Image (cartoon, rainbow, N blue to C red; front, top):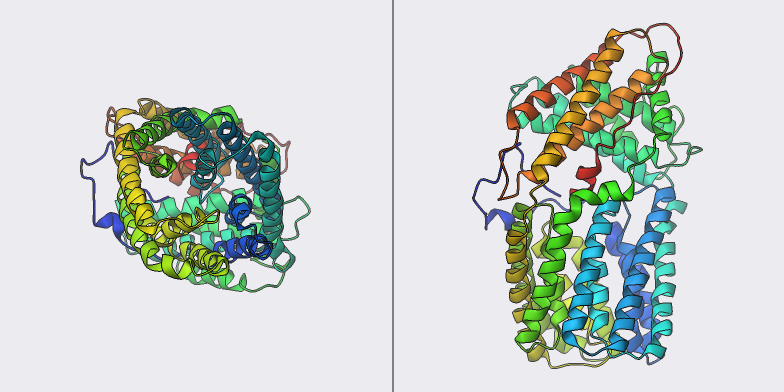
Length: 571
């Protein structure tokens, strides 16, 4: 998720149009998402074509889409994340199909779809599953609500989705056979490059300027993400210690950059390319103090992660927006006589982001991308309709294109996502192309308009309270770290763990403020206090790097505060 570069006390009042549509750089591993979804989708879909049962591919596609998730996670964590996504997908599908078999009331079915969309949004954001987030789960469950169904068919259809989901789990885990440490290596590479960029600019830019503060915050965030990635690897992972040594060096450079540091970090990043395992000698040689940094990582593993309830608290407003917006959008579509109100429901569900400003951006991107995608569908439909084989192959090509384009801008990816979704609805039987074009266009406009109104109507009045709480946690973490610096030696790894706790609080503080600053109905944020605390916190982090290592003593653990919760929930 992209945030404003400056910490502001509220939205500027300007809702951009053109800037929202600008293209960015493609994601570093877009091809992994693209290849995985094609590999996961092709075998079951083509097998069903050969068996003459393409109508069942709607259910296997639901499970196959799970291959889009968790590519940034180490494989031990990826296994759990993918299993959770598949379980959520199958559970939502089962509820939707059961509801469809029990009632034909459009009003009731839209209500069920809105509740599922809100649950998907809250749970995916709280769990930090990452792109594509909850929208895929909502698309599957909403479409299933309006599929002709009997109660006796539900177990078989859910079983097909579960089997395809199991295959997508294998597809997602397969790259680990060739590059078992790939995800953590990528996280470390990104951190090294962000810190190198900060080091290069540190001597040219004003150290307290907004641009310098943002570069420093980006580097600190990348370092925090890399450490958290390493913490999710298994204790016996051979890559964790050598990669940790590289991060220890990057933390020292972030605190006190010197000439030549940027080149050194970029050289370390370049050495992580390739398929070879990370050598035990990777990274600079460490002295005893640097080994304490790694011991601090081991200590941090013992701290309990925030509970699911704690992570759900900041998401109440966005969950309520999703519930209200999806319900009203679906009912409005029904009132207009559209036969597929789930398109309006899904459009509304896809808009809701961490704050109103980001929701507006997504609304513009969604409308532009969907309308252009409908035109692409009108062009491709005659070719796709030639045979079931061409229909499936067209869907596969569009799924690859969607992942190739969507990281550059959401609207660009929608050029492929929209026709792909429309063609999937034709797996059961071909439909009237002009009718689909008109209905999808109307539902897009209805869903976007109603969703945006819901985002404006439901305000997040607790955003300022979360900023104050994050500010207090960052201040307390800084004071604990300063106490360790000025007091007697607390033990190996204690200062390292306190330092990492402070770094995490600073990352969480910036993320919390940036999420809150995009709300339109919000009391003034303590902007000056935030900026002062960030500067003081980074000065304290720099002091921990220069702190001499005293003699041995007993180990004590700093108290733990779950700081990155808001950042995880809003990204």
